[in-house]
Image (cartoon, rainbow, N blue to C red; front, side):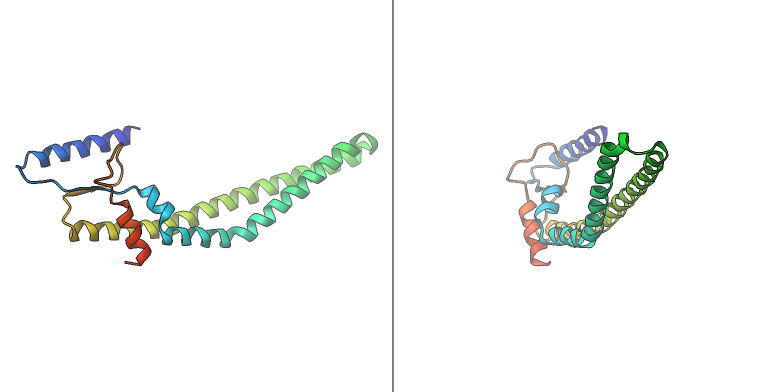
Length: 168
C-alpha cells in the first residue's frame, strides 16, 4: 500500500513537472503488466511449460495423499477392533508418512515457485524490451506500469501483447 502510494506520488510529481515544461503535449502510456502476463503468447507458453514440467510430481503427490487418507480412514474404522500395540505402530507409520507427504509438498511448491519466477522473469524482460521499443519508436514521454486509474486513451497494453505475440 505504501509502495503503491509512493509510486503514485512519484508519477504525479513527474506529470506536474512535465506539465510545467510548456505548452508541449505530453505523451503518456500505460501498460497493465498483469494483463500482459495473462494474455501474451510467451507467458502462456511459459505456463504450459511449467504445467508439463511439474505434472508428474503433482500427480504422484496427489496419489500419495489419497493413499494416506485411505490408510488413515481404514485405521480409524479398524481402530477399536485391533490390538493396542498394532494400532500404535500403524499410527506411528501414518504419522511418518504424513511428514513425508508434507515435506514433498513443500519441496514441490518451492521448486514450482522458483521455476515460475525464472520463466516469468524471462517474459517480463522481453515485455520490457518491447515497451522500450514502443517508447522510442512512438516518442512517448513516459510509460507507466502501475497506476491506480488509467483511461483507454493511454493504455498501450494491447500494443505490447501484440508485439510479444508477433515475436518482436
